[in-house]
Each structure stands twice: as structure tokens, then as C-alpha cells.
Image (cartoon, rainbow, N blue to C red; front, side, top):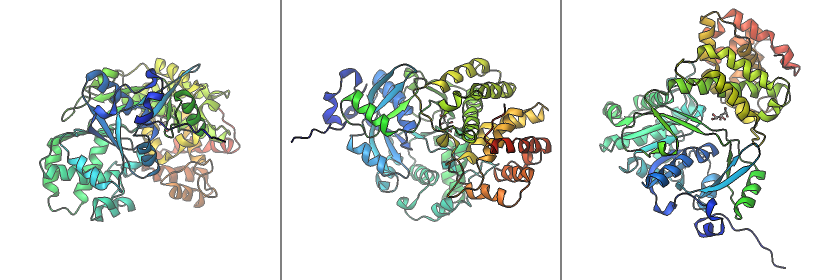
Length: 488
Ligand code: CS2
């Protein structure tokens, strides 16, 4: 009996998919001009899409070489498909799928170290982008300086060969140093991670690595970095849940060929960039990106309202037994939570940013999208790195103005509840680089207020730990959450 297997997506099979689902650019016409670190779903559904449309509309051959810092699996899968993959946009009532062709090569950071080195010093590569998540920056809690005491950073500072470096920060510092030593072309390094002032945050850790290195010419490298490398701030936005087997099957049906690395996202996407690039860049504005002198107002609004609500929903939803954002929105309190948090935080947002009431209305719609299966476990992971960015700025402003913070206290209590020690990790299946330290805050005391103070101190927030009313208000919410009740 003959068996028929569906062929995989690749340059050779492109003619099998419907013309309107094919990439907007022919990847063979593109050149390596952007180096990206972090080959996850978010990059493939966001910057790669903007770049493809910018290249197609602007006619310049901006191709991306994407580097996976750890995973070799995704590199293999991408290469097996000539780096083609599909993006499925899930609207509440319909979906659209099409293949994207802007990624022209996929590399493993360590196995392909030589090629990464070449690209880092290549004068045609004038843009470097990153999606490495908040925990990839190794910032010291509270100060944002490079945590040179982190074992991974300490090992990279001692590494002799590029192929031995395991952190992106170390790899970037070494690569940029090599570029500076040959007086290489100016380059813009664009953090696409969810942190306030993310460009400056990245610049700080990269410079911190150079300063802490034993390179004899480190001062010369720092001097040249100051003039030839820009770290523009950006705000990126698109909800992109982790890809599932069901998504792979849906992509196969839509395309008629197999796609092992498809991504699924909401229709909404936004990219706002600080207009301070050091050299040539893709005309991303041709696909709707905004270049502005100061991204601050957009950044704080997005971080505090969208990401802030996401984290609150992740921990409160976990306590209540929900698995996804859509599950939370289907409870009696989900929408109320988003609106209460929005109203509480609104006074802390810059007046020249988006209107917070409209933004919150839009968020409720986006979170309700039934096509998104966004796992709370995914959003709740790395909480020690995320919640200071998402909640603490607003919390500090409100406390300083003697304003009430009941919703933020509830959210904080829910986060604390999710850091309890549990067999094999955290109780709701989240992971966190500080999981052991956080769990220890529960072992050392049985007094909830004391635990909250210790947890806040682990996050470098001694000021909040010293706010007695905040600590007692937060601790008072723990028993109900522990019993699975969300009282809002
Ligand atoms: C989420 C974000 O996983 C998370 O922590 O809050 O990835 C969020 O979906 C994006 O920032 C939306 O733009």
C-alpha cells in the first residue's frame, strides 16, 4: 500500500501553496543585514513580519539572520524549511495564514559561533535586534546594573573563546568589542523586550560586561561604543502564545504543506521605536511602525496596563484554577480585574501617552479573543524579573501620592502565593531564575507579613518592603487566595 506524506514547507515546495499565502518577499533576493538574537515565536510573529513588509514595500533587501541562544531544535527545524514558516492571525471569528520569508538563516549561538562573529563585524549588518526575555539581561535586582555575580556572567567573563560564551549579553559585548576594534560601521542594537527604557537597560549591561572584562583595551572599546553604537528604546506589542501541536496541524491544513515552526498571534500588532539609529535601518514605518523622539509614554502605558494586567491575571487565575487568559476572562472577576487595575494605575501614566480608558477597553477585547490560548503558566514565569517592571513603578508613584493600591496589593499577594515552595518547582508550574530564593522566604518564617517583606527584598525593593501598610494589606489577601478565592 502506498502512503502519502505531506511535504514540508521550503523554497522547493513554495509553488504548492496558494499564491496569496506565499511570502511577500523572495528570501533569495534578501541579504543578511539584521542580526537577531532569540528565535522564539514572538520574533517570528512581530519583527520578522514588519521586516518582510518593509523589504517588500521599500525594495531594499533587508534579510534577518536569527540566532537561537540555547535551542538547537528550532535552528534545525527552521533550516529544514529554508527558514520559511507561517504566521496565523486569529481573529475572534476567522483566521488567516501566510508564509513569511524575511528570515534568511538560522544559527545556534555556540555551534555557529564563527558565523555569528563574522556577522557581528560585517559592515552591511547595521541593525541588531533582541528578544531574549527580561531574564536574559542579568540585571541586578533594584539597580539594573549587570549582575556580575550571576554564575553565567562570571563564567562568560572568564571565557577564552566566543563559542564558550553562553549569555547573549556576553556574546554581544564581545562581538561589539570586536567590531569597535576594527573601527567597524556604526550599528543600532534594539532591545525588543518588555522593560521600561529597554534601550538604556541593554546599553548598561553591555557596557557593564566590557567594564568587568579583563580586556586590556576595554576603555578604548567603551569610548568607541559611545559614538558608534546606538541603543534605541522600543515598545513591541503582539499577543503570541506558545505554538501547540494543534497549531501545527491547522497550519498544515491552511498551507497544504507541513510547517513544524508556525506561529499564531492576534491580529493586533504595534511597534514604536525611538528615532535614534546609528546607521541604516529597514523602513519599518512602511508597515506601520512609529518612529518617535521619546517612546516613554507608549512604553509605560503598555507595560503597566497590558503586561501589568497579564501578570495579575496569571497569578490570580492560577490561584482560581484557570489555565489561560481566556479562562480568566470567562470568570466573573476577569474583566473587573483588568478595569480596576487600569483605573488604579491611570493616574501614574504620562498625560501625552495613549488614552488609558480607551486602551483598557481595547485590552478587554484583546484578552477575550477566543482564538488565543495564552497559558497563564507562560506569562507567570520569570515573575521576579517581570513584576518590578510591570507593577512597581506604578506602586511607588501611587504610594508616594498616598493613593490607595488595593488591586496592586491583590496582584502582589497572588504573585507571592505563586512563589510558595512546591515539589519540583513552583506550585502552579511557573519557572523563575530566583525560584529557590523566593521559596526560602516561606521556609524562614510562618508570618505572612514577614514573608512578603522578604519576597520584596529578593526583588531589590527594600523601599516597598519597608512600607508597613502595603505589606500588611498584601499579606491580608493571602489566606483567601490560598483557598482559591479571588475577591475583587
Ligand atoms: C506577556 C507578554 O508573557 C508575558 O509576560 O505579558 O509576552 C505579552 O503577551 C506581550 O508583551 C504582548 O505584547
